[in-house]
Image (cartoon, rainbow, N blue to C red):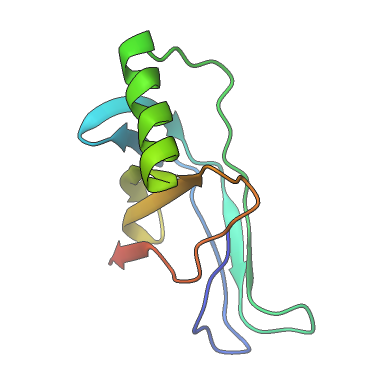
Length: 116
């Protein structure tokens, strides 16, 4: 996870304690999971960063939904997912996550908002 605009001495560890995020595709919930504790650091020699990993151990997406996602990636070049939920010690997080047709592409702008 990349972060921007943090002071050099900024450091915070958040998450855990019942933090949960939901992933949806155009309003249709596709996954939900707990957020483990992770840390965010300001600028250092390696730049700004957040230490954290999101993963799904098991997921099942209906074939119709899989087809919609595949089509959006083919036509638009990326499929857009929403990620939102409460992260303890951080606030309510809302993100747009893009899954590009070319998986090596990255979004050049931050796509998340935090409501404290």
